[in-house]
Length: 287
Image (cartoon, rainbow, N blue to C red; front, top):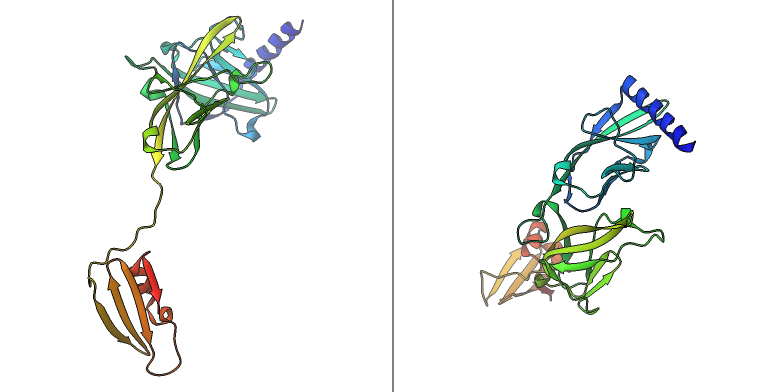
């Protein structure tokens, strides 16, 4: 009886969708996933747009995607499931949300790609993450929340670097749920990391693969000034009430001030602002 009522309700919604004009929006970001694996997509709604029941469509079809869980492509609750996905499933999909006074259709581009020859991933499916050198950091295996089990736990993950198994020694690398913890990141950590898991759906196991390109960022270090001229010399200059002796020794600069007339004035107040700014971040002392 409940199934019959749900079907009747959906039929009414479909009839209303066909009769009325919906507001439409297109998502610009194309999320690329691996083919021949299980995949789940959600309707990308803003918080103020979650106003009704969600129905999924393929391309411009007016026929909703099946809700039968044994269909390879089907809608389960509000999500679109591919069990598993195939390359030919790539294309545009629509999710429509509607109540008695509101209707919105969102166009979503979905692409599925095969792994490249002799690789465990396809470059089109890469996610980029960045970590600074000389610090501890972590990589996060993305888009796994859909695959939590009945205890709300994520599937167990295996990590690879450049398609070779990664040793999780709990010293250099540590696996923690959907994260890979790295100790003291160096330039050698740069590369492509894949996180792989399996998910059981209706008694059958399916593979999940994500690939992350790690880019390492050099640590910012202050640069001492390079004195081009003069070198190892002493120069004197008089500017208004201030008298300066500039002593240069390789990359160190010291300023000696004298005041022939009137009260003492700090050297910083004597220098024009642009002169101080042009000196840079080197080592300076005022005597």
